[in-house]
Image 1 (cartoon, rainbow, N blue to C red):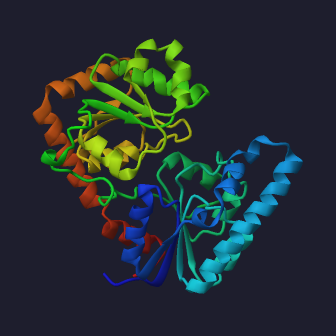
Image 2 (cartoon, one colour):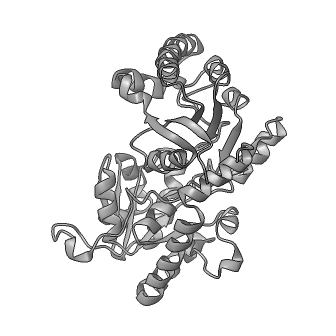
Length: 355
């Protein structure tokens, strides 16, 4: 099919593998497609302040937001005007102000992919308002669609971006470094000092005693008084590069994927990363998984509906290696085929009324 647009721009955090997934879709839509991470033109000092400013009193917060968001939007508008784009993809809101969205709409189609709920994102209080300017909103959570429909925003479609195969892919076993630890089960990710952290630890504790390791931040340590066995499975780690993460995944067999309490019907996209690396995800059940892979396909992602049964599910697949491998192969091929950049671009074109 022909390209629907001449020139497209993606606004997204470059460190996320989602950057590549969305940019590949944009390349299918546009003759020319570019990606831009505004964080690369803002100081880390400013970004760190902004990530915590919601904790400050209203007067200080309002003054800071006015300064920071206008600075960010000056950079964004300059980038957009210089590029003469006719379609703009935005991950979440990327610090956009409503007046910038209004300017974009004069010359380009505006498409948002919601990675987080617009009702629960403190870094940009104008996120929800920005969505009212969208030509199309892509949502990985059907519950968010219902919420937005309720307040009058209707141009929303359920959407899964697919696997970024440039970041998460199969590595020949002969290339694995002997310095790395071969694991049956691995979990990488931050914990929290709130009840969200307790929830994570409760699930991961189900795998205590197995060949299992957690790579995570210091916040995990708060919960060891309730789950002392987890301490032996924990390695403190900050940011892990995508290359290292892909290697760790390739050297494991199962990855637990917990449900983020801010995502109601949707699932964490780590599930797609796991399949890309050839490892079987054990996913906390969410309603939208039934739409991701219809029953007619004949294969199902192993789901956790009851934390107390998670260990038994893990042990079953560890004991049945052939079945585990075959299931990963079938699930991976289905996602790669059905949610390819080409297929996703066609879905977007159809919903934008483009041929």
